[in-house]
Structures are given as structure tokens and as C-alpha cells.
Length: 336
Image (cartoon, rainbow, N blue to C red; front, top):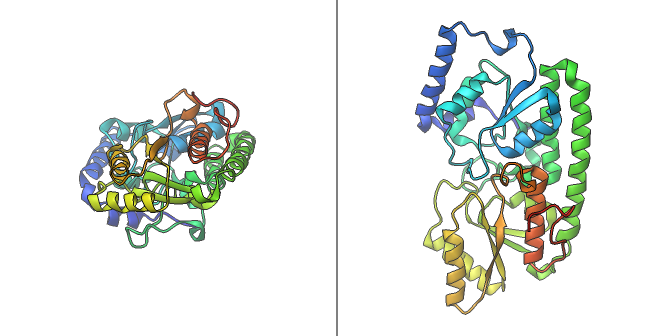
């Protein structure tokens, strides 16, 4: 199993010591007021669950059902690569019974806070469920991996077991219910995975090129048979430069690419520069749509669920690249 070691947190994000100090102060305050650790407290319902991203929160809510109250820290417009936990985030985690995060350095600026929280309550990285042999390497950082596991539905299904096992261990009385909820959710994900495979195969072979704002779609490309290129790397910490833009403009012109895609959590300046750069060379490329990469859609919307997020992405890509897909997706629920 690919474990997210605490030493990796400390080594990679020591520059963000302010966050650690904030977390330490909250813990100190709890100690001074006589607060017991999570394991010493009597069980109460609903169980308070905190998840760093919406995708993880969707798993936790689907598995936990009425026995849990799930709080995602990052909203629909939040880039987890750049996210710093606020004072209220730290307080919410301090009140949580159990915490789930992605791992693989997705929440790099939260690492110290997660280490602090793990001292008093169970904290789990859902990426632990994926064997290291299945992970994509991060070309920018040595011994690092691409954290965007949710882009391959079959890989993301493995994360469900982390949540089931963690909740069942914390709340044994609910184990059977958690397993039943998980099985129902996994059946929906299997249907989604089959849909994405089917429609992606309809894209003409010479047009199976997906160009996005940053390299968040590597697992998607590997799983569903498209070549993927991003203006920025796997992380959005540094902005794309002129060399990055020119490189992709050259590629687009040489390979007759007709559509590129923006992302909801990344400014579209670089994508607009690429479109303009291609036009200056006499090649017309359109913005094929806006994809959900590091966050889902608005809360309460279909696109604000993991299934809706992937349905939207796959359907948008297929239609823009010349394939065949229903206008409103898998079950006709996508927004027009």
C-alpha cells in the first residue's frame, strides 16, 4: 500500500510552520480546558466527519448515510494545491470524530495541521488504498506521485474501502450499514466507469488529445484512452510561462487540435493565450468547455457530486473532440 508518511509532511511543507503553530494553539487550548481525546469520549450521533475535498466528502456521505454528518473543508471553487487552512477549519477539525484527506501531497499546505490532528483522533488518507505500482509519477518532484486519483473512476472506487473500514472501526454498530451503503455507491461508480469508457471510445483516434490548464487528467487519460497535456504541471503552485504556452501552441498547430479546455479552479489566462497564439499562426482552436479538475461543481447541483463531476467532464470532452455522447450525460441530469 502507498502510505502517506508523516515524515513526508514535515519534509515537504516545513515552510508553512504558521499553520502548524495555529493547530498547536488549538490543541493546547483543548488540553487546558480538559478536553478528552476522541477515543475517550462516549459515542454520539451523527458522527462528525471532516473531509478535505468535495470528492472525498461525497464518498463519506454516501457511505456514512444518516449515521454521519460530513463537512468538506474545500468548496467548489477551491484549488487544494494552494489551500491554507483557516482558523475555522482548524476548529472544525478539532471538533471532528474522524478526518479523511487525499494524501500524495494534494493538500500540501495542510500537512502540519493534519499531523497535529492525528494525535487526538483518527485521520486517514484515502490514497492509501491504491498500490504504488498504479500511481503516476510526478515529473516535477522526485519521489512524488500524481494525487489526482479521482480522475480514474476504477481507482477512486478503491478509496471507498478506506472510508468503509475507517467508519466501521470507529463505529462497529454501524458496520453492516456502512458496507451496504458502500456496495450501492460502488454499483453507481461501476455504471459511471462503463459510461465513460463507452463514450470516450467514440472520439476519432486522431482527435483523442486532451489539453487542459494543468496536469490533473493523467489518470483520466490512462484509463480512458486519450493523450493528456497541461499548460501547468501537476501542482498549480507556479504559473505557466511563455515557454509553456508556446510549446502547446506548436503542438496544437502541428497536430490539428481543435479544442482545449479550461478548469473551474484554475484561471483561464493561459488557455486564452493558447487560443490567441494558435490564431496568430492561422489555426482555429476553440474552448471546448470548462472541466472540474480539483473540485466538484456547486453544492446541491448534480455536478456538485462526484458522479456528476465525472459525467460532466467526460461528456464535455467527448462532444468537443468529435465523439458521440448524450447532451445531458449519463442519466440526462447534466445542466444545459
